[in-house]
Amino acid sequence: MSLYAKFDVKITANNPNKKIGIYYEKGGRLSVWYTNTRLCEGSLPQFYQGHQNKTVLNVSLTGQVQSGSTLMTALQQQQQTGRIPLDLKVHAPVAIKLGRLKLTKVKVLGECMLVVDSLSSNNLVSIKASNCKFRMKP
Image 1 (cartoon, one colour):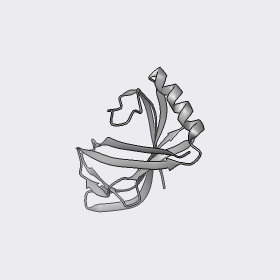
Image 2 (cartoon, one colour):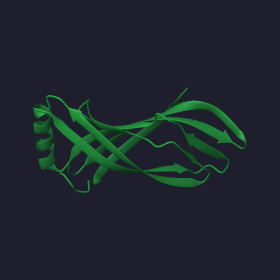
Image 3 (spheres, one colour):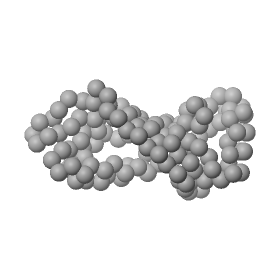
Image 4 (tube, one colour):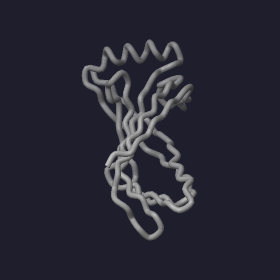
């Protein structure tokens, strides 16, 4: 049995800095995980984010898990509680612009531990709890 997952995710990228712009480079990825199994993933768009700017991104995530019957049973049990733990992972290569200088590229790695209320088809998923951590890697 295969398990198919599709999420349409809306993410807000916030740059509150007064003098720094951010180039989101090619190769950025988002992925959703459940109990160490990747359910789906998608690409972040390439774009430049100016200083003191909020940018809303709509990202489509899709995936397929082979031998998904055990996973499906676990997800159905969690769905009955109304609290499904998911892990959203971010991998975003970025370059910082300071004035006219475009500095070296770094990778922004993020992980958000989420608890959502439902995974039913065609339903809006509500986030009940979240805890996010980000770090930069050369």
